[in-house]
Image (cartoon, rainbow, N blue to C red; front, side, top):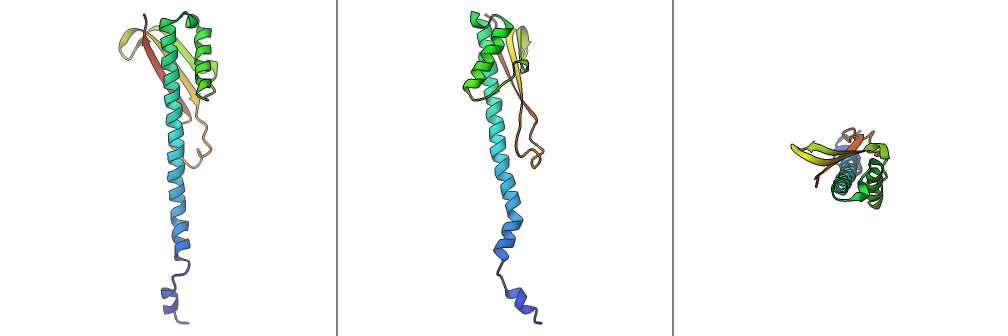
Length: 135
């Protein structure tokens, strides 16, 4: 059998190249989508934490811990993010980022990704921190 025929035969080369590059390409696409979703959740938590810390400082609507947690849950629901009250930790009159006399709120939530097994670099939790001066 003449092996020169097989060297010149290029049928199927595209399919082989695709089979080699498709997993890398799809991994990059999933990384971008899940990374963007993670950053969106982190930004949402930071905004909700800041808004709750501000409410603690300037409004009587957040004068108790139960009201503060309720405010945070309602605000997060407006962004489509479901939180658990136990994961919202308000701290009135504390030091935040080196400044004393601040209202601080820390929010943590689980980050459940359908591609965690494929992309082990994704975190299992995401958190946000918000501070506002006590007035």
